[in-house]
Length: 433
Length: 167
Image (cartoon, rainbow over all chains, first blue to last red; front, side, top):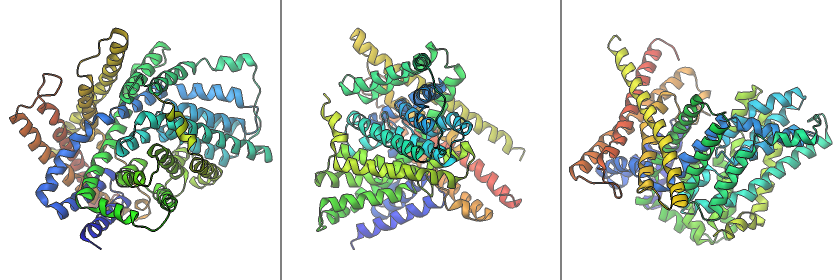
């Protein structure tokens, strides 16, 4: 084993030791990276990198869409859009077996079209949909499982914050990634809905059929949601047709959500301030992880670890699909323990060039890897969405995790479909200008 | 203790002022971006240097809110093992975590101050706007310093708690 591989493994161990003891992820990355840089290049060089990385990344033009799309989601949330979407979908779908859970899943997918965070989606929808499902005597495993899983649709359906990060790290068009996520997001929403329908058809006690509504009531329910639907069409249509860059789409999306909220008189001054404060907090912690991770990645680069690792992978006497399978297993495993931003920052700079050389499409790979991370969001032991739903609903974590199991199977089906039929991801980006 | 209270209040006030600036900057960033797009497509007149200003604004949002995010414990960590330890062990790990945070951000404060001073000495300007670059470079040491000070307050409170036998 040469020095770069040995030191790289030691520094990786330091990183994992720190973060699994509860050290903030950004600090864990920066500390391990700094130690590695001192080891590989000396104290002065390490200090210089520590001083220059924060400004370089905090002012990176590629990351401008991130704060804007985060702000768009929070403005929409403060305007009460999550309740509007739930009201609309529940009136259209409540007559189906498990109709309220299906309605919640569809509302989550629609909310994902204006919000790029799975945590925010689960936190927004749980206090609205869970009491309704309790009222209708839904099985708690089904209700909480559908809430946790439904929230993850926000990561696939654009705008998606992980896609922005992946695009920056893998040097892939963020616009193409956004558009590539649409069909898989809709397919996953369909799989979740069919899962709920099938379970409740077999055992009606899990999710009893709800009340019926007149066509007039159904169409009236769309009133509150139309504005955001138009906004989504404008932002994604602009990206798809090449009218906007991702940064411009983010600005127009946030501004549109702001104007809509004001025009409908549902966005108050305190709502705007809360949305901006929440957005600033998320931008700040994500940026801290990015900065820390970049110090770490600089070490991996200068020490020669990245090159040694790539050469080792190329020398493996196996098919590229064996390497892909290995990557999938690794992503599922670390997805159960680490935050999505940390995983992308830890892995993509190293694996993206390898996967390009192995002739895998990076847009397709991005969708696949983000979907794999969605699995981690509802899997034990630290599935973040499961814990958010547990926090809001006050049911046991075990119930939520058990309830998530059918949806995990649904996600695996979606992953297999994406691997077998890459066109699910690549069809729409292929038509882009 | 009598001296510590006003210092703590001062640090918290600074965090809130920086948060206020960060929040205002985010709103301005949105208006600037939208104004640039609307100006370009409706009046064929984009805002000059909009992208460069947006970059600086994003840095403002991310860096100036460092102290506030630390104050509300907003920097994410993995607690899967931590919560399984006895309370006293948890306190010592938190202590270690704060010391590490202070060291790393202390070094960032030091080094980024040197970079900002160097930029000032060279009189470097922004590329598209006739403004000096150095005030924006100072956002890094300011944000990192406030984070260090906030972490120091948390460290002192934790040490007092451990001494008194609280978690």
